Length: 387
Ligand code: SF4
Image (cartoon, rainbow, N blue to C red; front, side, top):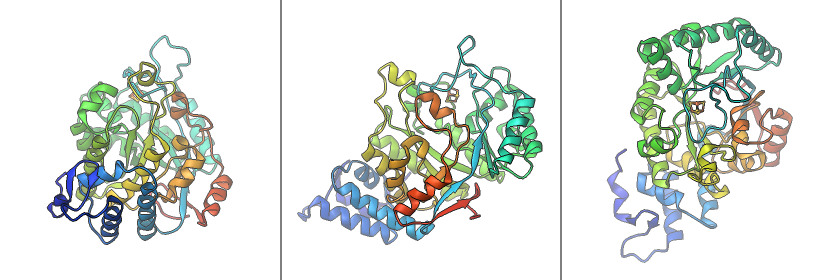
């Protein structure tokens, strides 16, 4: 990501912003910067780093500016999607340090849903009137590209009208390797079997030095970018995520956001930005003393707010009630987010990592939360058409 030159004279070091030799206080300069952003200035990396480093009541100024941008880009509605997860298996050949979901052969609590069970769960989703089924699973040792395509076909047959939001670049790379075909061929097979959009997960932090420490077996940054770009080229939209709050730095956040913005400039294929706050309790990274106990509330709010301000080519910013809890998620809605995510029947990934009450959020509760901040709640499709 290149920094635009026009503001670089305002910085002396990351986290310290001032007008050189002009004696203007930091808080005054923050308001100038935020006004500029509202007027169309594209934040550069140093400016984003400064915003992430902000503490105290200036956080509210950033949140307020992001809330104005939310109104301008996405309107006043708080949206949500009625969705259900089907995680086919938790058996996984990888061992990501932040993951509390995956199991190894011999572990207690391994599950694998066969064709009958997958069809049953998809039929249940249809009965629940969901408009989206999400499926991402462990990397089962026996899976090939055909295994993913079969599962998507079964879901499609049992729930023909439901949007299938499935896989991520890691699963695509794994299927390609196992079947000795290209990642494009894998996604073509998936699309043919019924895939409508792909999850932008497995991004974690798109900085290889961090990936080495938290998920060494995962695809490197370059491959994640290539597969996401290929998906967009095939007409498969994806979400854009960041998994933060473990051992990365604010500089890594900025690099990550820069990559997302560059891809969006090139393809326009991201539907939304979804910050995923690290759930630490049951993860090897935290238990081994190699990660902190998740992001703080300030950081969670700034990730939403700075994400909104920095990603000027995204319409939608989601605040995940599963990761944040409903109270902090509500604050995210007045700090730049316009979407609450899904109802999430049968969530198990965050639950595996130690999160509580992640199974289902009743739209009536979402309505209460939205009304409390004076905004209407609207149901949407996966691709943000209002229902
Ligand atoms: S994050 Fe995904 S790939 Fe990594 S261990 Fe967990 S299930 Fe496996």
